[in-house]
Length: 108
Image (cartoon, rainbow, N blue to C red; front, side, top):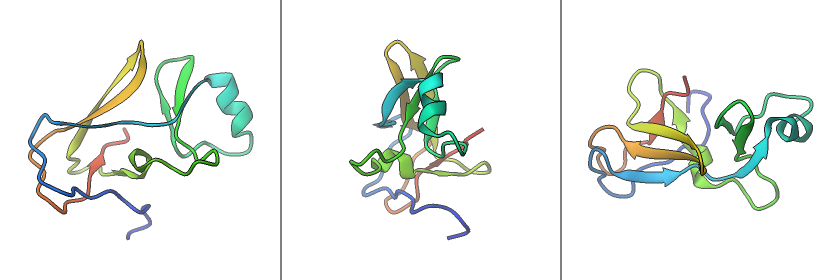
């Protein structure tokens, strides 16, 4: 799979602009993120602002499927919007997505 993770695939067709998922994880301060991951860059942390992150790393409950959405810089099919109040990363379809297509976004 080209060095990527497990991936997430559309179980049915998704229309352009449709809400897909909120990124799931612990909302934590940047200092707490560094304490939680002292030896490596966290793989599943989404920056909300300068002070907050959503850490989707498995903390014993298993990684939510939103953390398995892979990167695609050339042809992503999801857009995301980050809001600080409430802390959220909201994914929507950036185009029509056919059933069976892998969901992806540009990590930036």
